[in-house]
Image (cartoon, rainbow, N blue to C red):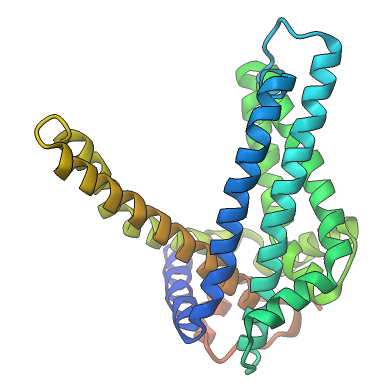
Length: 286
């Protein structure tokens, strides 16, 4: 496990170097984050007015019509949110694969690739939104047992669909075929060595710590010096946002590299051969 975690951390560092060579790729997670915020603001009022939030939280006092309308609005929110995330992730994965195969990608390449896969992205967003809504309903309506089951199902879903985005980008499969293909890659090439992902999470956590500390320190200082406290909070919040964006981009680049190795058996030159093989089981899928 520790060897795989170390391999994951090394691969994360090497993915960061890829990002440094194509700094403009950070635009994709920035646009994705801004779009998700706009989507959330757009749907927040309708969710509350239609009872969507209350319906998802299993609160009483709503008529059947309100509950149905609430679920419809909630589903639309999930769908649009997933569409935005998958669209920009598809653009970034496409650029990452071009770079990892020796090309020189541009933002236009990423957007063109995502637009060319628009039918697959829309179909996948519909499936992901349906599953997300069902898991949320299970979590909110079944007590602690439901929370536990929903967490397990959510984890299994995340693992099974891990390679869906690069599969959509490269193989242009429909949503159900993409799920099957992603699951096949996981079973054949990664299996129990998913612990390598912990290395990436650990690096992100270590980068978050000082900025979270700044936010906590700023809150503590507010009573003594409002200006100093607010300054620390702003610095901490900006740092958390930047680390989050960088972590998202690095994870997506690494996903592209792992997909290439998993399906083609070739280790991209930007990655350490031993590290990426340590993160995978020996058998590959084609």
